[in-house]
Image (cartoon, rainbow, N blue to C red; front, top):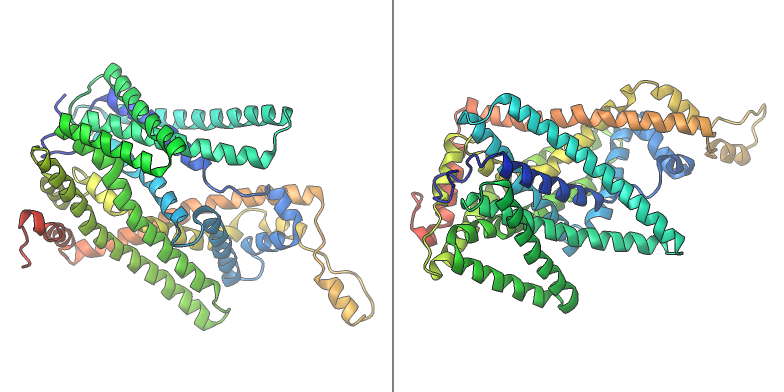
Length: 483
């Protein structure tokens, strides 16, 4: 296997043993992160039984008009984000962004590696299809095992009289620790493979075990001695790695420190800006001015996301240059990240996919907001929506005479639906969520349209970002044509 350690080609085909092993680890990491998401506190049937939640469900299914449905979906999404991130600029929000950012570079590395192998005719299209089919099968199996394991331990916990709320807290703490362990182990394996130090299943396995050992030491230090011991252990291991092997140390820092932390910083800002825009939308009135303002806010969110892409294009090279400086202190040759960046200019969706993908992470919050907004417009098109609405809507009481205020109170009383109506409405709500798939495609189409306009008018965006990267690190290299 030819390593990519020279820096001239960051992504190269590493073989199915490396790709498969790291993919399995990534599936476990992503599954853990998904289990840390704030799933609905109550079952959908319980929400239908609650008057306030039922009104929200009726609104999202089409009762009350387009804008009312749009507002209900955005408000529900904002509540979910509040439970997941906490306050917009909180430490919890940054922690969540770091956790998510661990998966991005590794997933892009694997995808770019597979495409590199296909482009070099080292693997066939059939092998790629078989690989992605295997990924789906392993993902489903892993999710099922997690659910079975959780149910088993929950029953055991209940049998000894354990508190359910305490069990959930313990589970989340354990999952968070495992997420750190898996993230470090994956980074260890990727760094070893890119540096050309592993090439078969056995060495991949030992690299992963080594990563687990280091990560477990970090977790123990953090648990028993606090964050300072964790940082000291991290510094010691980094110094040892820098002393032993330049290429390995650089890629370990790249995938475990530089990319996750810098991307998380920008993503933190991106999520905060999007949530600020959601707050603005929540204050709008059902008027022409309110409709126009909602569209303007969505456009502003797109512009803000693209602006953060530009900022990230300057921030990532600074991190890489700092790592190069750190390597030079230990007498190691620098890493030629500029040649990798130039690949993103000439072939952004092929050889430069890894760089392009990392730069586009700030648009994810905007994509999610657009998907929720567009999906809300399509939900009333779900089959049997009218029947479901009729089943969970309160009937008006029969009365031949006006009863003044008493009748008005009766008419506004929200009567819970029966069990059969609730079950049918729940099935329709689950089915309506499929509209998020075409909504996501439409949202992605908006950014594809922007890229098409850039290429149509021959705007030098890629060259601008490359020059921005050079100028942001001119303090180290002296390369900048702008000044």
